[in-house]
Every structure is written in C-alpha cells, then in structure tokens.
Image (cartoon, rainbow, N blue to C red):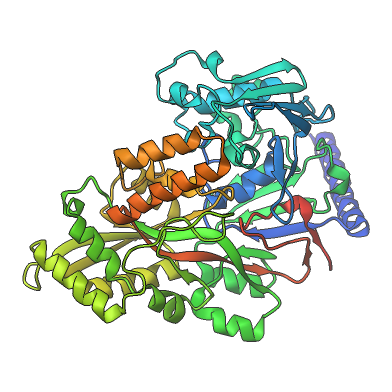
Length: 531
C-alpha cells in the first residue's frame, strides 16, 4: 500500500510540474484567451435548432458554412473554396475544401451537407428556421409534409467534395442565406452515433475555428482552437469563454473589472457615463434590425383593426428613441428597415401627424371600438429581462393608458420569453429582428406563415405577393412586389414597429480585429488580443 501511495505521489508531482511548464509555455508563446458576454443562455448549440443571435455568437465560432462572414460582414468562401452558378441562376455547384476537417480529424464532405440540409427540412426535426432555406427545390414541400421522401430535396453530393444545390427559382440572395447557421453542416458520423446527445461536450465535433470543451449552464461555455481547422495557423485566440449576460449592469461591472473583453449590449442608462468615461470601449454602430411589438392576432382583442391602429398610433416612438434609449436608435414606421438596396420602405399612414393629434385620433378609435376610461382594454405585455426592454414597456404602458388601455407587464428570461412567443402564449410582446442577410424578404417573411410569425398574421393577398416575389427572377420587379406586400401589412397594422436598431457593444481596447458591421456579426477567428 505504501509503494502504491508513493507512486501516486510521484505521479501527482510530475503532473504539477508539467502543468507549471505548460502555463509557462503559454505565456512565452502568447496563448490568447477571449472572454465574451453574449447576452443570454443558449438553449442548444445544434445549428439546425438554434434561433437567437446570442446562440449564433457561439455556433458561428464552432461551425463553418459553405460561405461565411468576413470581419466586416461580407460573404466570403467558407467550407467551399469556390462555386459556379447556372445561367438561369437555379443550380449552384460548390467545391469543398479537401483540407476541411471536423474537430475529430474526419473529413468534411458533401455528404455531411446533404445529411444536414435534409435533417433541417425533416418535419420531425422541427427546425425553427427551416423556412429560410425554402428557395431550395422541394424544401417547403418536404418541411410541410407534402413530400415525405427527403431524397427529393434539391441537394446532392456529386462526389465527396462537390455539392450541388438546385433551387425552385433564381434567388439573388442565396449565398447570403448560406451564411445563416441553419445552413451549417453537422457531422453525420457523430449524429448517427449519439442522436440528440451529439451536441453535448465530449460528443460535439465541429468544423469551424473552435471546438467545444465545456458547458456549465448559466455560467459559461468554453471553446478552444480547433487544431484541424484549415486556417488554424491564422487563428490568434486559443480559448474563448462565452458568458450569459442578461444583466447588462452586472456585465458592465465585469467589463470594467477586466473580466470581460467583449459584451453584447450595455445598460442604456449608463450610456452618458460610458461616452464620457469609456468612449473608446463604447461602440454604437448602424444595424439592420427592427424592434417591434407583435400582437397575437389569434386573440379576439385584436380582431378589430381600429384597436390595432390605435395601439400603434399611441406609441410616441420619438420619446422612446430620444428620451429613453438615447443611443442613436431611429423611430420605426415600417417593418423593413431603410437602407436595403433600392427597396422603398412602406411607412404607417400616421407618420408625420403631430403626436397630440395622433393620441386624440387613437382615443377616438378605441372609443368607437367600445372602450372607455370605465371600460378599458386590459392587456398583458410580455418582455424579456433587459433594462431597455423594461423601460420601453413601462413607457408604452403609460402611453396606452391615455387611450383607455390598462396594461400588465410580464417579464421572463430570454429563452422562456421566446418559447412563449413561439407557442403563441402572449397578448402583446416585445420582439426584435436583426437581419440575417440584407434583403427585405428576411423581414417580411416574419409576417408569412412561418414559425417566427409570432402574431399569426395571415393575409392571402400579402402571402400571394410574397410567393410571386420568390418566383420572380427580375430583381426590380421582385422588389416592387415586396413593397406592395409591406404596404398591405402596414395598412393592416399587422404588427407594431417601434424603432430601428443600432448595435451597442462594449469592446476592450486590447481586442483587435473586431469590426462594426450592419449585421453585428463578429466571429472570434478574426480577432486577437493585444496585451
């Protein structure tokens, strides 16, 4: 027994020495660690199932699509080195990197992409964003159960390193679609072995710049550089910690203490102080996104268009952006944000009306619908935990009070909040959408019959125009059709746009390679730490 104990002691001493040497080597070689606050706790790291930008911050580091995002948001080659497109714009042929590997050393092949895309479209997978890939031939028919044979999806492996994707019709923004995590590959050999457990640490393998090593829920996710990544030699940061930072005030304290190098968003009530005391670290930049309140149109309370219009009219967007938020947001009177090519946004008809006149008109509409001070419309307004969301909700409740609306506020953490929205368990709710790609369709699809159409808006004329736009190859004609569709939705008061986003980030001066872009996507592979 003594001998055995002595051997274990020597072993432990040796491990200690090796650990010290390892730490010394890390400091000599300049091993870099990044600490990122991502805003919320991911519900999953399965690219086929995630649905939020806080999850994308991790998944986009772990996985690599056929194309990917450059530091400035441009579309560049990813798992594919190059591609060709048929003359009619319906057939894309991608040539995969022959040095592309999964983090277990297995090759990334065209068969992995076929497997992943079929899995996304399989109705049993229940992928929230499957619809984003409906331009692929037979995708919608398969996802909605009209076609049961997954092999009918317009995706095939010509050989191990050549992937062909056939579309229903020419889709000018298709490459941009492929930067979305729903189009990321997943490892066929691992998923077939572990099933749903393939995403757990120790099982998950990825083809991006990083690989997962640890996930402690509500604490952190840890990833390290993927040594099999084809461009690993140019990835400077060795280890990334991702933290759920829903409490922005606590995150700011951690950032100031040096515990965080980056944080997604900051507490808005600290903006003036941040501009004065930390101007270099406080980054506010334009962002392609809209903050809005969906109304649950399945609820009888919202069947009367007069009520929907009144609720929208009574919101003083300028007060919210200029007096409450004060970080550069722009009042929104359309659902599609401005600045997308030659698309002409379709604004609500009361824009430009003085607010006191709007409020008077909104009150008359509510009274015509049968509501009064003695008989108010009672609503529950949901929002996810965030100081800005709370302030906006409190302000909106006060504005609605002036038009005979009694509002109860209900908040929950982000994963629960969006789960309730997807289950239609709400009356009015806060939601936000940041563009996955710069095309009006990315926003208007939220008002089509898709899982992210939280309010359940369903207008046959709107749907027909969007379907016609999807099948139109002429880009100008396609744009005009989508403008007509948005006009219908705005005249229906289908939802309540409140403001267009700006990106608000805390970025340490020691972080290099972080570049503002309108999609607010920042992959760790482009960054480095300068001590």
